[in-house]
Image 1 (tube, rainbow, N blue to C red):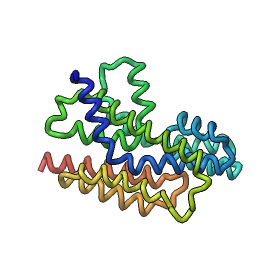
Image 2 (image 1 turned 60 degrees about the vertical axis):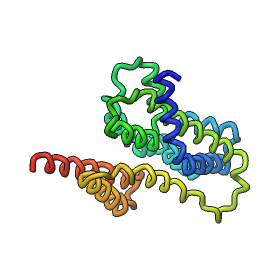
Image 3 (image 1 turned 90 degrees about the vertical axis):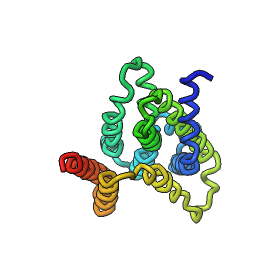
Image 4 (image 1 turned 90 degrees about the horizontal axis):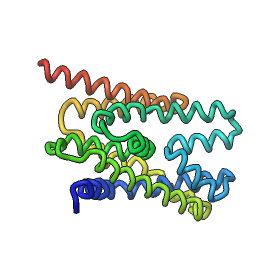
Length: 231
């Protein structure tokens, strides 16, 4: 097996633990689309094109409430604004690859794939990793799992009892990914600040609480890292 395939395989392998949370996420999105009146094929197509569960759920809810197209689109853009930060963070790791390949990786970017990639690149041997191939392995596996879940949800979602509350699996995936990355005081402060602000700002419209938590967490981590370096 050549080196590129090895790193692709590593990305696939590392993503497997979080699939137990990703599959229910896709299932929920597929089921919500069908319950909102979409045909099964449209629910899967919607999940394939949008490929962003949180904004997908928000868009379906707004469409169900007969919101204007502008509101639906703007809400999706606000919720997905965090991907701008992800892209900026990943850019230096994916330099030099062709535009078509870079576009494919951008389409497959997800919270889970980003967290896995950044954690892998930051390890002691991160400099030796074929970063595009590792990211592709992790992102492709997460993407495929999400769409399989969405297809399953579109097929059988209407028969799942509401009491099962599968939504609990979504935050568990993020906890499983983020906790191992907290290795020092700046990262712990960033996580604590982001979590606290996100909880306190949960009532803000358009999921702005999530953005507020992300921005303040990044700022707190940056300031703590800078203070640690300069004493």
